[in-house]
Length: 305
Image (cartoon, rainbow, N blue to C red):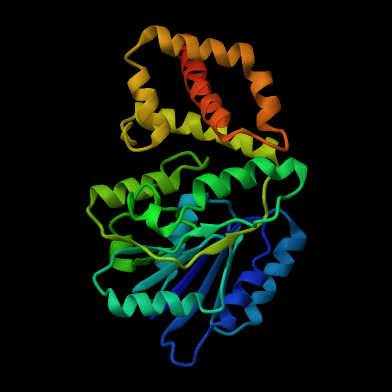
């Protein structure tokens, strides 16, 4: 019936696994949970995760070599015995006690689906000062309401809480050729759109745990921009698919404006970061900062070529 697939790296997944098992019903047929640990380096976390081997319906796969975010998801898909796959990120937790039941109810009335995305929320309470950027970005840009998600079902899809038919996953498995620096969900949803797979959205959220510090998230955000630039250059990503690359693509046609934006980043980077890393970061400034970095980084790459 259902294979719950959880990739993890240096994150304790015992609470998530037990949360899923607590929702198990004897009526579930062919139920399994498979956790793949991508060669975690934290021994304490590895030891804790290994304890799930004593739990029923659970299979634990500790890898001896790190294979990356895309490859480990593909590995889980191949290991699964069932036709219905539920992928969950390690750092999430179901919001309600009927999480599995909500998915099963939808499956019964919507047998023609290819992919179902349940959504995500973030804690309402403001976190520690050095975690506000990730928290605010998540609340404003990722925790989108169901009504908003269904307007753009592909770009509003994230790979941290979704069900997919195994037959569909065989068609659009994760790209293992890309750098292990985010954006695999963007390519995955773009491929789903290109292959005309049916993506449904429901209100069945998980809550995101383990917020990164603002400095770490900012660094990863810039790395994500660099990766997207490479994808666009190599014709892997349609520049019109994401909001940032679409805007940058339009600006590319105006030499002066893209040059000005690169100069703005060089001149005002520290000033902008003072706000972005503060307790009250502006998401509009963060968007502008990233757009400026897009052209700053591209300009530097062109000079180095």
